[in-house]
Image (tube, rainbow, N blue to C red):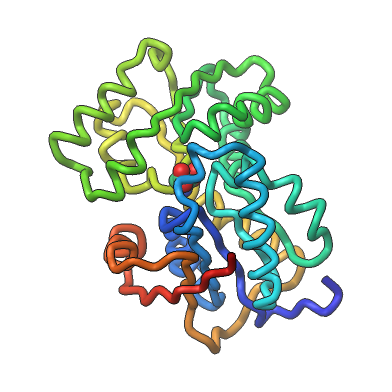
Length: 269
Ligand code: DGL
């Protein structure tokens, strides 16, 4: 990292377009930073894949983003953060600053005094038990109820939120008795910020809801600042790459990113 300078871009990647919620938060809160986004649309969803397959995809994507000269790589996908964070760090140590989406959420919970929290995420993230394990390290007495909610990603991508269909699916999952008496719920998937307000109203505002947007930006900013790599002026526009292109992917980006995006097809496999 010796030759890193503050004008280099931040690489952000996800299995597809859900990670755009994180890219969007970075671009709004750190507008001087340049973003290079990569969505692995050829292999989504990661949430149903094995950890080995996810690791294989992630290593290739990180190599691509490092070749684009990124000073920092944000793994904007819980399934990828869970399966591949360590292997990415071991492989590319010293070549960029790495940020996953799990640790900032864990830190946010650990700063508070909850007795019981819930976690919802893809099958891959829940299977890894990463939230329970990391939270147990910091808060041994905290009870963690976790559940895979695999219908939520396709539901959101098809544009079903704030309607009867999403209402039925969300209440079906969240009415599960293991979530009784939770004080906070972690939305541990980068698609879920889109249904955050729906979830807050399901709990009547009585449960604190955390997602991986603001907490991740906070971590990005702190790490860049510590390394003296916060940008002071953005020169280039953001770039958005996908490993497989369809018009429907491009249309769906509107749900996740506030400005209109032009996706570039970049088949790295
Ligand atoms: N964005 C992914 C995550 O945060 C979910 C989508 C997928 O399964 O690929 O886990």
